[in-house]
Image 1 (cartoon, helix red, strand yellow):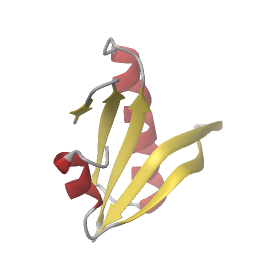
Image 2 (cartoon, rainbow, N blue to C red):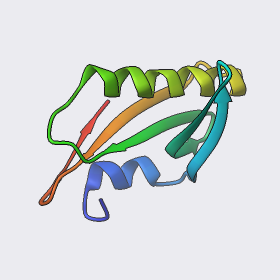
Image 3 (cartoon, rainbow, N blue to C red):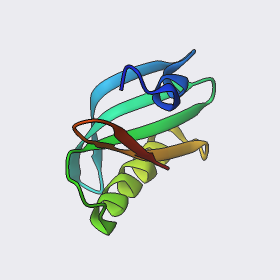
Image 4 (cartoon, one colour):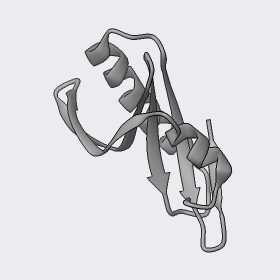
Length: 92
């Protein structure tokens, strides 16, 4: 991830929190990475599986809705970062 320009651009001029805990819909969740840039947020979830899954999208969507509700902001995006041996795949 250090060498991935797309990932580095997400972090540029931002603040971030790793393993951000939140309670949403009476459930405890852990967001892998929460990036705050200006007045927007990016919820990042890391996956080490080879296959992409609808369950991954559903999970990160729930995290995103939780951050929208907590921050009262509609400017919240999410992405999945699939970590592979030789590269990473970022899906928004």
